[in-house]
Amino acid sequence: MASPTQTDLRWDLETFFPSITDSTYLEAVEQVPANLNGLEQLLNSLDSNCTADQLRDLLDKFESAIRKDHLVQSYTSLTLSTDANNEDAQKAFGTLRPYSTQLSKIFNKYAALIGSLSPTLWQNDPRFADDRFPLDRLHLSAKHLLSPDLETQAADLAEYGSGAWEKLYDDYSSNISVQFNGEPTPISAIRGLAYSTDAATRAQAFTEELKAWKAHEIPITAAMNAIKGEASYNAKARDWPEQLDITLFRSNMDHATLEAMLGAARDAFPDFRRYFKAKAKLLGHKNGLPFYDLFAPVGTAGAWTWQQSEDFVEEGFRSFSDKLADFARHSFNNRWHDVYPRKGKRDGAFCASVTPGVSRMLYNFKESFNGASTLAHELGHAYHNLCLKDRHYLQSRTPMTLAETASIFCETIIKRRALSTCTADEKLSILEATLQGSSQVVVDITSRYLFETEVIERRKQRDLTADELCDIMRRAQLETYGDGLDPDFLHPYMWAAKPHYYSDRAFYNFPYMFGLLFALGLYKVYQDNPEGFQERYDNLLSRTGMAMAADLTAEFGIDITQKAFWKGSLDVLVEDVNEFCDLVNA
Image (tube, rainbow, N blue to C red):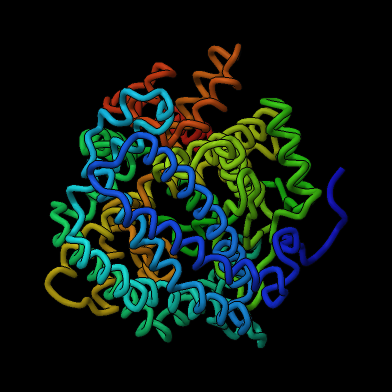
């Protein structure tokens, strides 16, 4: 049964602490420095003569300190993510920031210690059986560390540099308001109008959105330049060839795999452009699809309320696994979801792990099939967190690529179920919504990858202006969408609208494509041989931080180093394009 009808479904954070000013929260915050100081003292007492017993003790104490710190940090960030104007939460965040910096320093010391040890210390000891791969990776990463003093200074400066700029972007963009039909409207809600069934509303909202980004471009441009500049400086100082190499290392993959995937995506662009043109034809456009109609609903599927989405997702999950469906229902009944946009709430959607196996999910929900699909996506992340709950911190550090596996696999379950159960009248709408999401992950993600590649390279020379950032974004969109979009109606400010650019970790884009195409490949394995798949799938999710991506995928007979695999997954999407175009032409 669906949750009671509400217009303002908010998550429950009181499970963790009654409030940001409650004594239990304040006491937990007070304990953080003692935990971290104790961990740091232990680290300082160890050197290259560290024994296996001492290393095992260090790993266990590191785990305990990390979990306590993570709880208060997560609770504070979640409170701010739905109310950037909460002064108590802002003060708490400021109090905790030095501890985040201290933890960063501790982790660098930790990596330096591991780098000074012989790998045989953990490779030949059964007590480290599940820690061998992450310890090996730490050992490799240690060669890119600065001297201990410089690492300490870098961590301190990041608090006032990239960390401060990222917070500025989050707080500032969350509070942008637009006058729409005489009413002040949050920018997140304006962006949500791209899904409106009314064509005039979509066009008007798009115009107002671009005006708003233009009016607020100066601080956002400064944030982009500061974050990208600092990241490039640090990459060079730590002897990484490029920022991309850092992302690939953290993703447990190599350049060849990335190029195989991106190459297959480029080969599929003409097919996606056929989809854009067919949708443009359906909506009465002659020069390609204007960006403001990229997310326009078509067909007769109508609105999907939150309650309808809950039920459909739960039923779809049950067709795959009772465990997955029961988990979804548990999250609904226990208010793990914050659903609708409001002033001060950040845009987009995300899932955050708070305690082992327990998550919270944020949306700016639109009553459409895409809204239901996003619900399935974030629940996939939460389920992944559940599968990782018994893993130690080092073992559960999932690379960005595999971090999207469960989310997009869950999306795939829902989309395929929707296509198989819908009426003939609904099929065009569901198929379009499916392609809408897929095209964003394949085509738009590539445009973001191209944009970020050029921005990072040019930022090495000087700051970029807002006009230059807009120009780079336009060219990236034209190179990927091609004649599928109306060149007079692109979205040059997409760089301002996407929070992912404002992290100190570059290239938070291609992992989504990896997740989609790998999930499609996994889903095909499941369809071909469902016997025992669920157990193997859960096991995969529990080990995403414990092996190279290629080794984990090989266990399912998938070779991600070859373009052929990626093409096979894309062929599934091309079949959807063909069916959509046939329906439009009919």
